[in-house]
Structures are given as structure tokens and as C-alpha cells.
Length: 65
Length: 219
Image 1 (cartoon, chains in turn brown, yellow):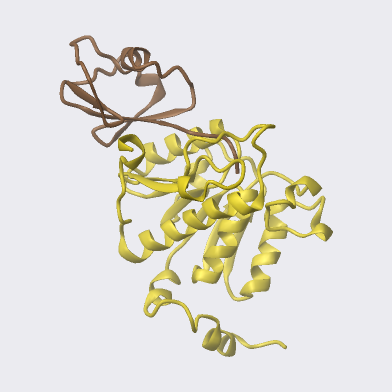
Image 2 (image 1 turned 135 degrees about the vertical axis):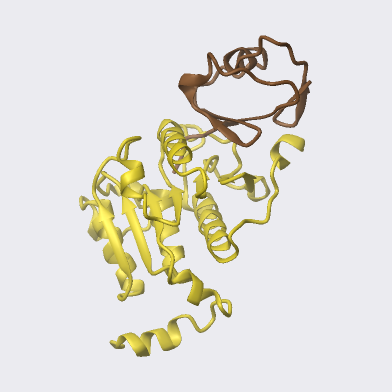
């Protein structure tokens, strides 16, 4: 089990960041991803695996300023 | 009436929280963007006791900016950072402001703001916000960055929150996107600008911010 934005999500061993984002329907491009407090760079989404028990934060940023 | 530096500082901070100025005057704050957020954040910080700012923005002032940005009609057409510097020096003529008229990108961001104690994101476009947050967190994971996200439309005071994700602090409702339907006006943009300035002041004074992390997700 992992936590994504406070919600429990079933974990499986092939969970990359990309796969996780797809599973959770985070399709928008303007996001920041943090796993256990550590920022994950965009180029690493494909290869970075998400360990069981991770706390994942997906932050969607809005235009306006 | 013109006061000399000593006379000015004798009164200027009279109502500021005791002990705050001694700390704030030693800090350097970076502001990326000098639009609706940045121009108002800068004004709030100068009044709050910040005396050293780095502000970067490539844009010039248009009449459509005046509904929310801290500029005046006789400044239309001028470079934003230069007009902003002038306006800030009208509040306190004794502060140090580095005003850079350039486009901030992922390469120059860490150079421009590298010697700042904290960075405040004040861009308009979400893509620019993401770029800055990523560049900053990669290079300076130990330093705070305070960003604005979700400030379009009007009303909905209670929806504006501050959420803390380690050193990333987000002010705004994190929902309302700037678009033609929502619009942007001073009455709401300034809440977020003030929240960002207030968060930065708290971090600079206490070394941390009272955390309400995950409120968004749990509610």
C-alpha cells in the first residue's frame, strides 16, 4: 500500500512514477511530484520506482499571478 | 517632508512585531515575477521589514495590469522591475533592491536567486511555476520556496490556504485556474500575495512555518 495525496493506493512491484500517475489518472503535465518528501525530476518519472509504503505527493499548479 | 535615515527608522517600524526587524533586516529575499503577485508581495515585504530584495521579470507594464498589480497609470509602458523598484523606494528609500529585467529560466534561476535566503515564486503561467520549483528544489533542497497557485476569480476567501510540503510552501486555493471565465482581480490576487509574503516572514523569523500539510488532500 502507498499513500498518494492522502489516499491509500494498492501497490505493485512494477510501479514507476509514470505508471503511478497513469493509474491515479494524473494526466495533466503541470505537476510537482514528491516521494517521501524528495522531489522527483520529470526525466526520472519513467525509471524511478515507487517503493511499497511510500508517501507520494502530486501537486498540480494553477496559472494566475 | 524628508527624513534622514535615522529619523526614518525611528518611526517606520514602530508598529512591527517586537524583535522582528533585527532578524528581517539581515535577510535577502528573491521574487521571481513582478506582476499581480510579485509587485504586491514586494510592497508587503518592504513594509514588513525586509531591506534586501532581488526581483526579476522581463515584462513591461500594460494598462490591463493595473486592476491588480502594484503600479500606476503614469508607469504604463515602463519595465516592471524598474517601476517596482521606484515604488518600493518610495515606501522605504534606504533599502537595497536588485531589479533584473530578464526572463527567468531553469538555468539562470539558481544564479539570479542563489544568494537569497528564500525564494518567492510570482509568475503567471503554471508552466513557469513548475520550471522554477523544480530548478530551485533540485539545486537548493534546503531552502524554502513559497509559491502562489489558485487565485483566479473573486470571493471564496475561505478556500485560500497555505499548505507545506517540506520546503515547498503553496499559497492559494490550488483549484481556480486563470482563464477568461474566472478572470483575475486585485481583491483575490492580493490575498494570495499577502499570504506568500506572510509565510516568508514567518519562515525568516522562525526558521519554519506552522504546518498544515495535507489539509487539501484530507478535506
